[in-house]
Length: 441
Image (cartoon, rainbow, N blue to C red):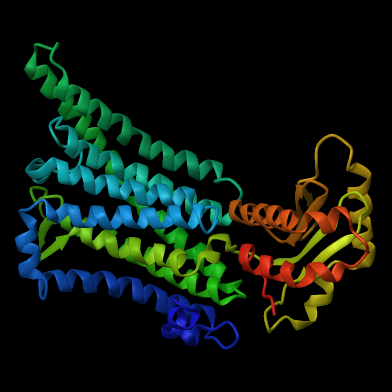
């Protein structure tokens, strides 16, 4: 698919001539909500007969399982063949969703007899329940690492602390269902009931966690949107926001579903006369989120902050081999000279790198009052990024850029003759590929 076909429907969002970020954000939220409700409408009107026919067959859960695993395969392809790094947690999220559909398929009719974590120890329905907290944990890690180098401690403790009882309790429920050495059946049922009551409480809390992660994802993607200087990141932010809006819509639908009748089935239930096919609705959210990475692989290295300049410096001689200053927003044209490093600063960094080249350890970061310098070293070059933030994915992009730059120019770098022009064109191509938040002419 060429670039024109990818972006034709969103052409009005072009970073060169685009609507204000809040307008694009509102549009993304509407797209995610409408897409989810459209799927609900379609499965109850045009596809109603088909869904009813599928409901009592193995195809009902086989179809979403195939879709999920296919999307997981696409992410693996992006990572292994196209070398788009940083998708591991997102791939874990997709894989867990796929396993959930597989366990639904294996559970068969047992799945429709009880609510989550009230499975009477039946193994496959309980495994379906266990996939939910694991999938959400993967999604949480992905969202957090877009914004920071490591997940925030307090938030991580709260989310993992809410998920852990669900995982442990689910395992205990399976074990109790298989426990044959306990002769007192009444005591066994009482114990199981007590465990399930605790799990239902934590499931309610975890529902709030899912809502919080989705809202946080929208906020982070909005900040990414406001810092977007390339079309790929702009469109990717739009799709991700739409995906999280779809997740929130799913959350509301599931909440309404379970509050109306606790006796309804997990996977297809009556909601005021409307059937909500949960697995198929979740596919809408999953597709929107992954579409950002499938259509625009560069979005994997998006950042919700400004990255101002990048330099490639020879650590032994202190020579600047390649440098590029990021284009800033149109309302900040006069800041370009203030943000980019000037000659004295470059000389200081070059001298420092030269002095410590043979010392133990390497520089990874230098903090300034309003920004920081992030270093990635490969052999005798150092790649330096100047930004006002850092994240897991920024570090992934810097590492990928540093490795490819060095190995493509290894002979020229080690036999450097003073001609930096040989690095410019290809350097910009690598910059556009691995660090797409830089606008490259």
